Structure formats: structure tokens, C-alpha cells
Length: 541
Ligand code: EUG
View 1 (cartoon, rainbow, N blue to C red):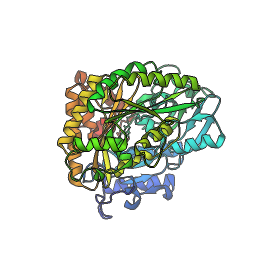
View 2: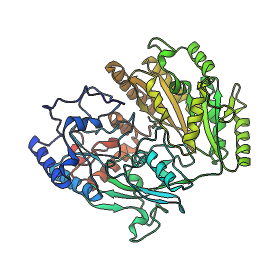
View 3: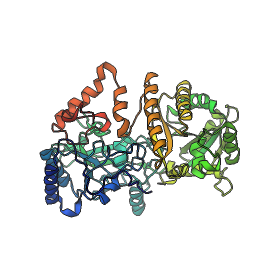
View 4: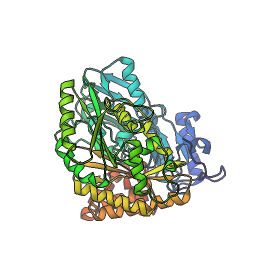
């Protein structure tokens, strides 16, 4: 993927952070060079522009970094935050910085220095087969952990997201999702090492006991457990994290169920809840995808429809017929000894089979062939759901020329009426804005992440601006119905944080109290998740 260079400043224009003069900035850079070595400190636009948002949402410099540094140790990270405190230079810590649709690697505050923690801190520090966990540094990607496990020959699985090229720590800290039974990444981390904004270092959980061998086995320990405060926040820089791993089961099989009509959504969700809430027979994190998301894996929009008006129903019918898909397509995987798998699949097929028009397949009954493009997602999901990293889902980016998406991601109860209300809300507004809405409901035990991928061409400024407006309108309409998003791009993080308004914004007031206690000079990822330090609050940044 190429990065648009159109919005970068020329070499002569400098993007400086608020309250920092050019002289102070240069002095901070000189100290960083002295601390890390000049190989690991960069201000040249050619290097820094690598961290521009790959899916830009504005045409200006509001998310432009000034420099990037590459720490090689926890002590380097401590040195960096101490220098930032001295000069009031905002830092923006990233692991690898993928986060597509949510801002990529770019900082919230223009002129921030990117602390790329994963470039050099990318080791698997421990891989423990007996207790099924890994202790990793922020740069370790899903592909790399998978390779490390294969190299050792251990019977352990990773739990990858849709695209496994990114950092495990980064995904977990932005509360990303995966699709095996271990798909709730936040829940399967255990033990963290964190550099705090003042340069102190904390090990959470059993890591507090010198010599403990249970750091990765029991996340809570004694007293408050702060780990989750370091997700979607700006309270510290994580330099090590434990990740608990699933043992490979004896066998696994993935199914696809196609449902004909958009309006089947309510019945699908109401059928799903009792099968899912007790972790059987739906053992993994199933996904329910609309036809646009699956069609985009194997075709481009222009193959189906010539202009930018919403894709008409007749064309959707042709897509369904040619691809052998439904308007909704459900994917899930069952695990265990083969007789258990057979029984679970029979229950699942029988339950969803009551919805008229539903068609059930497995990877066995619907093999991957060149003629059957509609089997593509089934086989890709089988890999993802059985711990094999892939990046096939990036095909979505070929749907439009220079394809990109903004992620509007409300949480829904696993209830047919809620799902239909959210779906119709996004569909109506996306149609009015002439944007395709590729939907993926990610089904947890008691909630669904309704991932609404709003597709646009990242080189088309009009489309980009229309899509950003669409996201803001959706945040407002969702909040009016009592719905909130689980994750947000910097460009709409303040807006989302605003909607969590109960009791005079008690959540924001609490976050601000923590922020000011931990980061009194306001240097770390200011504005992340709508959390601003006192120094920069109310400045309209
Ligand atoms: C997906 C995308 C997300 C997310 C979770 C899952 C999957 C897309 C853009 O954000 O938060 C196929």
C-alpha cells in the first residue's frame, strides 16, 4: 500500500507541537539523539511520512508528526519520556501502527514525536508450551508469533484479527478482536510492563513479586488491577505483555450459512444468542457479514455497477446468484474431537435452517475452486478461526480505486431488534451519502461489535469529506438511540467520548483525574480516546 504524500509539508515547513518553539524542539531532538544515537531519531519528512494515516480523513496537517524515534530498550523509553517532560513535546506511542480505519500510526496532536516502540522491541521473550502463553514485546506481529510457535513445534494457536500483519500488543491495547474462542484479546492478556509518563516503570499483576513464575498465569494479583487502564488510553507505554494462547484442539471445522434477505437479520441474531451465550455449540467469535464485504474479497465495485449511486436491489440479486451468497453470510468454527464437531454442526444447521432460504455449507461441502468465488471467505475464515494468520481481507481495499474505509463501530445487544435498527440506520445514511457500507457483526457472548466499514477512495477529497461527515452523523444518531462505539479514529474520538455523558461526563472526569495524576505535564498521546491533559484541555486542538 502506498502512502499519500499530498498533505505532507515541504521540507521548509515545520509542524511544531503546541507551546513548543522551534529552538526548544531542536533542543529536545538533540537530547534524543544523545540518548538513543542519531540512527534512531528522525525528523526528515521522508522517514516521518511513513507514519501518516494510510486512510486519511482530512486534507490538512492536523494529524502530522514532527519526528519519529525508535527505542531499543525499556530504558530508552524512560529516557524519551523524561526528555519529553523537560521540553513539553507531546509523544505518540505506537507498536507497529496499522490500526486501519482508526487513524493508523498518526498522532492526535500535530507536531507530536512518534515513539515507534515496536521497530526494535520485537522479540518473543518467552514461549511457554506447558502453560500456553507468550511474553512478547510490542513489535511482535501475529505472523511472527505464529512463526515462532511453528519453529518450536508447539501445539499452540494464535488468535489473529482479520489482518495479521499488525502488532499483538497494539491490537490488544486498542481492544481489537479476533475470532477463535480467544477472540476477546483484552481478556487473554496477562501481565504488562509499562513505562509511565514520568519515566517510572510498572509491572502489573504477579509481576510485582520479585522472582514470580505466575506473571503470565494470573493477571489480577493483589489489590486493584490497572491493566485495562492502559487500553485505549494515554497513561503509559507498554513495553512487554503476556498473551495467553489456546491449545490446538484435535479438529476444527468452519461453516458458512447464507441468508437471502436483508430483513432476515433479526431472526439470525435471535437464533444466534442461545447458541452463543453458553459458549457452545457456537464456540468461537462468529461473524455475520453482508454481501458487500464478501463480494469485495473477490471483485471490484465497477464489476457490478457503473456509477456512484447505491447498488440497486437487482444488482444485489445478481451478486447473490453469481457468488452463491446471501445478503447475510454467517461464519463460525467448531472445535473438538470429530464426534463433538458433528453434533455441534448438526445443532447449528438445524437451528438456523428454520430461517427460510438459509443454506448451510462447510469447507468440506463447499471446497475452494476457481469457479466458486463465493467460497473464498469461508476458506479464509477457516484459516483465521484455526489460528493461521492471513491478510486476505485486505482485498476489501480493491473494491474502489485507492480504496480505504472509516470504521464506525457501535456496540449492539445480541438482539434482533437492536441489530435491525442499527443496520437500517447505517444503511439509510450510507445510501444517502452514496457510500457502500460493508458490515461485519462480530459476535461476543453478550454483545456484538457492529463493524460498519464505510468505503471511500482515499485520493478523492470529496468522498473523504463526505465519509467523515457520515461518521459524525452516525455517532449522533446512534447516541440518540442509546448506542455507543467501542473504538474510534482520532478525528472522531472526542465526539465519541462526548456521547459517554452520563452524570455530567463522569467517565471523562475520571479519566482526566487519572491523566493529570500520572502525566502532569501532559506529554503522552494527548487526546487519545478523547482524554486531554490539563495543559491542552479546552484548547480546540
Ligand atoms: C474489523 C474492522 C474493524 C474492527 C474490527 C474488525 C474487520 C473488518 C475497522 O475496524 O474494529 C473486516
